[in-house]
Length: 392
Image 1 (cartoon, rainbow, N blue to C red):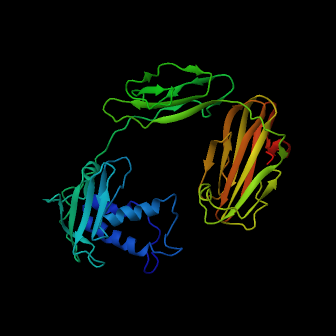
Image 2: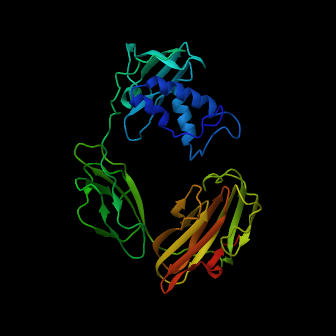
Image 3: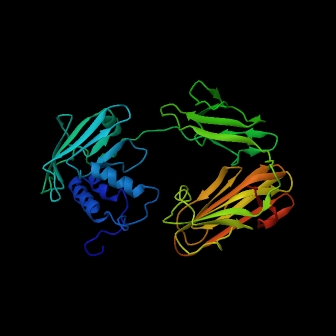
């Protein structure tokens, strides 16, 4: 550890003392992390925020509990930071967490009551929380080593969920027909689906054999397995490939927008005002004005020379996104030593199609490469003579 400061932490690790029969150690560590790892300065998060994970940890831990294992139905109790917090639940009820005799030097739970009854368990089930009520703690300066031991050695209760269904084809874009073949890795799972955009239920059409789709269709599917909750609903848009018809002959090159800011995802600059705009022959980082904390969007049209199956590749450091006909093909996020190439295979008709590349850069190395392969040609950089943008 650094002097006076805990180094970057693993989100759930401080709660593991509870599972070892020593909840009081969790209480002390949670308070220390809340105090030392967070503050209202640019460096107030000691680590990668990673789409809100560290902030979520702070909010839950400050309330007094945390979902150590996603997919399980219980929270592990830590040490509440506030004297009182009221959660307004979606079902119209409220759940109140109060901490009597609380203070910066009183992180230890002496005793607790749930809805007026003594509570001596370090686990709090989600169903209990959403039912509404009050969890009341009595806090103190010395550890109460007997509190919370009713749950000692007992793992959080598990909830079994039916396996997630998927299509065998990665892309939903097709020329004349799409062969819808649904699968689930659990052989006991039963797949139910709809083709009209409605949410499937246990009475919806049951998938038994693959079938063809010839028009653009919104497919939704979920699985049902005995003794398990239904899976989440998986939605796939099966799109018949059709080229765009520009109102006027398009102009060469892609439009670009250049951004500067603290970006860790292509979504972070979606509503920002670009620092510069213009037109470039191909996606390139050469339009940048500095080497880190930047974002770029290249947007326009790609002219597909002949009908067939094409593979698109994008290698972006630190991350990027490729959209074709406004549909995301893939996205890569997160800092890494080298640009990790991603690819997507899809069927396209000859003619113009919407083409968008988004890119962001944090620090260290910078690189961006957009390639393709298709009928009659091997992988190569996407040439500038097939990239255009619409006239104003």
